Amino acid sequence: MIEYRPLRVALLGAGSVGAQVADQLLTHRDELAARIGASIELAGVAVRSLDAKRDTDIPRELLTTDAESLILGADIVVEVMGGLEPARTLILQALTSGADVITANKALLATHGPELFEAAGQVGAQLYYEAAVGGAIPIIRPLRDSLAGDRVQRILGIVNGTTNFILDRMDAHGESMEEALATATALGYAEADPTADVGGYDAAQKAAILASLAFHTLVPADAVYREGITEVTLEQVVAARKAGYVVKLLAICEQLVDPATGQRGVSARVHPALIPLSHPLAAVHGANNAVFVEAEAAGSLMFYGAGAGGIQTASAVLGDVVSAARRHVVGGPGVAESTHADLPVLPISAVTTRYQIALQVADEPGVLAVIAALFQSHGVSVETVQQAVSVVDPAVDPARAGQALGAATLVIGTHEASEADLAATVAALSTSSVVHSVTSVLRVEGL
Ligand code: HSE
Image 1 (spheres, helix red, strand yellow):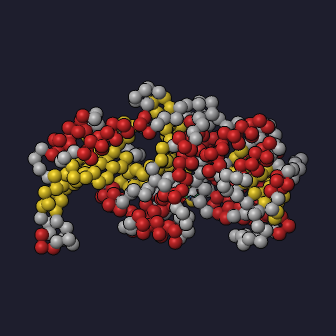
Image 2 (cartoon, helix red, strand yellow; image 1 turned 135 degrees about the vertical axis):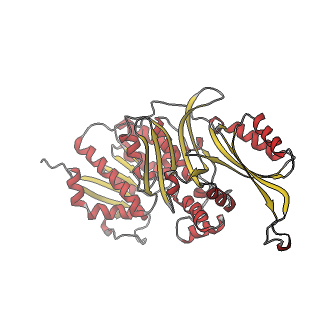
Image 3 (tube, protein in one colour; image 1 turned 180 degrees about the horizontal axis):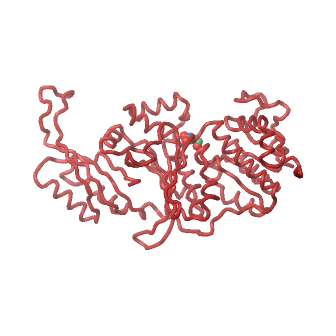
């Protein structure tokens, strides 16, 4: 076999992922060379501080603070430094010089993806980003390559480990949102500022990447409808399990037709949702991630595993290094990002979904009829109704324990209806004289 020249890899960043990537490149050099047909030479590792403590021992002579010089002459540049700048500028420099680039930087892709793909396309370089969604889980390559001959219809993803961990603690251990967040922080899942995770921003960036790939359409992160988990209560989680559901923060990407305009487009959204306990996503516990893909020919597929972690994410990065290196050996132009469908990104009002709505109502004759009429007048069809009479809590008043309070809890499940009609129904319920309070409004997915 003719030996190809050694391929030079420049590594930008030596944090929890970068240190593991460096270690694997050095430790498994011979095995990687056998798989690629060329040896990989780690040309250097760009870091902010030469003396910082790292998760693995990187030979001192490989470390440099001069990322720009390191990129020059590299065949493959691996960006795992994070943040928007200088990552964006360095990646543009690398692509412009013809290097293939591997990045784990979902925020950068969600914000500057088109600019980066354009720069890659101009010189026939390739941008790989398997580690940007779902950590170790292979999902980008399946969407980009394995399913390229099929048509993806829908993606339901648990793509944020921190929020899945929090919701799972609430479900499995009865912790409140605050307690579960404190546990996540103590165990190192949640950042000191957890906003990106609990606010759904991290999941929205990943949803933008998945929707763009799945539907061959550019979906910017700010076009993704987003609700985080901060409003989810322990009461909702407990009631969900009793009713045969679990609450998950879902990233949902699908093609649909806007019922109001007849326009076909892409919807990408992130919000808490009830999913049936029988759905495979209900079994995703702790900080794990999973992406459930529904494709026309393949049917349902689920990709599951560790969504974060240094060595786990390094696995996805190394897979991209091997792909990029093989392309150098085999030759040929890179494949441009596929945005040929160029569908409009539809607003949340175009989505149809099912809801479960819990209400505190007066327990009097005619109340149910008033509520039924409200649903009817907004064109929302009721599927299920459960009523429980509210009684005095023995912990509050032992002497009157169990006595009727003249109020009832109604849990109403709807058939599929438009978000706009459901929002109008909830607004009308909130101001109805027979409704004391609307205590929970959750979408239902995965039925
Ligand atoms: N903060 C993310 C999570 C990991 O909790 O899943 C990085 O994307």
